[in-house]
Each structure stands twice: as structure tokens, then as C-alpha cells.
Image (cartoon, rainbow, N blue to C red; front, side, top):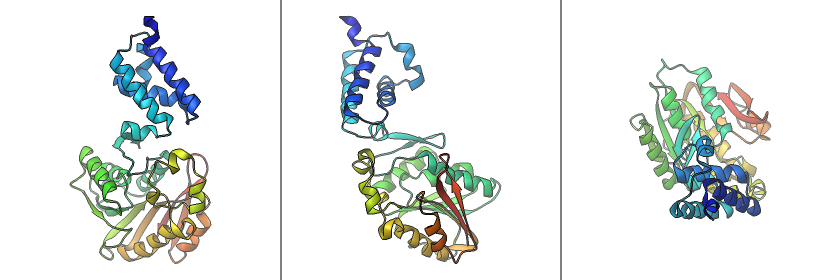
Length: 282
């Protein structure tokens, strides 16, 4: 019967398949993927529920539902993710942006003004979201952005071109602050790897099996990259420089100890009330 292939009916089948696969948020995933296939905003999907779905639409949707059923994150299937109300390209070579990371951009916005001229670095840039958002919010800022992964840098460069800030951010391959000139930066922003091997083993399959472990895992119980960040930042920051850094929700005391020689270290909570970011002054 013709009603079997309405938009509403293929959405229902997709939702049921994802529910049986026990993926996170099966209803939302099914809607987002169908809206993508139809090239519609998700909120407009209800307006076409009674329309007939062509065989091509049904086939394309089933391919995406099959990928999601295997646990592949929606962001990787779509190739994009929103961050700080902006759209960014993502791939399995970079972490999927999280809302809590937006806190770093907000904190920088509370300290600096659009009229200032600053030089900053985004260390461990991944998809480039932090450096690009800061460059967009502060039109007189210039930045460096490094990552140890060349495939990640390719994604970051593409995002910088898309958001038209390539002329103000230099991307290069590097490990934290290595290679940056001493006392050349006004501030650093970083979402470094901070998950221990034990924590990594306990992560959900969608993160553990699909997102790049290199961007998540750190030695020394999850503190190795933060220790290197402290060492490099002390060398490359100017006298009144700052570090804006994301961290694990149970790492505040360790971060304060690592940065104990610095003048101040303030910890900030995310929307869930968990310790999530630190602003450290040289």
C-alpha cells in the first residue's frame, strides 16, 4: 500500500531500528538523519510527514540508519557539527565538538575586547573550533593553531577557509607549544587530551570505538598533556599571558598543583555544574 512509504512511516521504521540497536537518542538520531536526506531543517520535518518518500530517499535513509545502528555518531555521518552557533566540518580524524567546550570561548570573551590586538595559540586544535571561534569574535586577533595529527589539521584548515579566517590563523603540525617562539603569545586556548587509559576503557562505545583516541588519551593518569602545556605555556607566553584550558571534571586539584608556580588559577563549571575549565594567569 502506498502509505507504507510516507515520510512518517520511514521515520517510524528508522526510529524502531535505532531503538533495537540501543544507540543513544534513537528518535532524535532518526529525525536528524531523515532531515539531512531531505535537505530540510529538522524542525520542518513534520510539515512533510504525509508526503510520499521516493525509492531513492528511502534507500539513502536506510544506508544512514544502518551506519547509526552500528554506533557511528551522527556528526560523523553528516560530516558536520554545530559549535558556538556555528557549523563546522568534522570527520573521524577529529573529536566531535561538545557544548561544554564553548565555555573556553565565553571566558575569553569576558576578559578581552574586540578592540584589542592579541596573538594567541590554539594548542591541540583538532577541527579548529576554538581558534576559529575566537578569530571570528575578535577581528583584530591573530593566531597559531597546532595539532600532532596532519589529517586533523586538514579538517581545521578547511573550517578556517569556510569561516573566512585563514588569513589570521596559521596552522602547523606540532605537539602542544613546541616550536613556538618564546614570549610571543598573549594567551593560549586548549582542549588537550585529558582522559586516562582506565577512563577511556569505561567510555561509551560511540566515543571509544569511533572518536580518535589520540585526541582523548593522555599519559600520567590523564595529566601528561596538561603538564606539557604548563611547561610550554610558561615559555611562550608574555608576562601577563593566560591559559584557557578544558579539563576533566575531577582534575581541578591536580591542575592547581601543576600550575602552582603561576600567579592564579581559577576553575569554572559547565552547565551541568561540573568543573570543566581553568583560566590560569602567568
